[in-house]
Image (tube, rainbow, N blue to C red; front, side, top):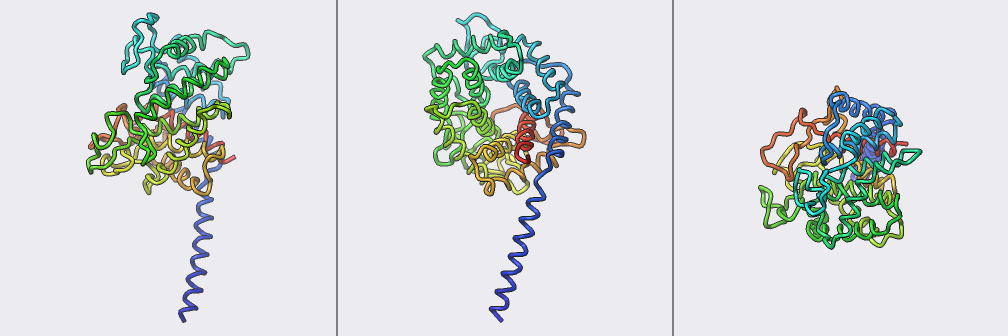
Length: 379
């Protein structure tokens, strides 16, 4: 009798596993579905934001996603939208021309030329430059002026907050590809080492947003380490963009890969059952509920890792697909609006309401990055 029950149980388990595997495969979206979602979200944003914004990080982060979607679709309207924005901002970030007043602490005025939030715009300017058959040096002149001045200084502490890694790391590899100047890669590694020394938790293998939030000086409401999802999303999305352009012989390459792979493990282990990540990754009760920007950046990074052979598909595909389901079935509204985006800030805030109406350019940009990478994944 026991043997018979054991055999029946084993057969049922095989049937269940077969069904689960089949069901999991059915969750992978079709390319045309991904394309439809991508276009719907992007067209909604552009239709409701026809006037280009400033060159600061919140708007500029959207354009990194828009350019990723243009690369997939070839839709000229997308390219023209970013070009119009770049032209409005004169292909510049912060506009001061007096180098004696250039700063890199937090600042939204035009003296903060060396602050990374004013440098992310250069990513899109460079992408537009690269698309030209006849290159227009004006498009990257300010980017080169700013970054080459920055690299001439003895300071290495430019990236003191996690967001800054996404803002500027890809600028430096993109400019390296154009100029061939090895200083871009050397300084990139030096700046990253500084940021890593300030914010990386070698036990949890993810990043604090900045030095203010390091445990135990700062704790979540339940006394845990407080790792901000969007902050880690910026880092986890930055490294793929760097590796896309980085020579395989670069002396810092193994460090970037190590951080990326280790982050992926922690990201996988902190995903919620519903597919999203809460704002405080290791304390879901600190700021409960879905959040789109961090989730989208994680989804992009996981998909990129699988698409480029850095992450195992069997291990990470279920995580990415579940996150994609959240992004397309919960975060994305029927009209194409991307909701549940935590507003501008630097931490998970207990009691802060984040609902389907909460959107932002950077959240949409993150969603578009994830969509573009999902399109590549399902090919």
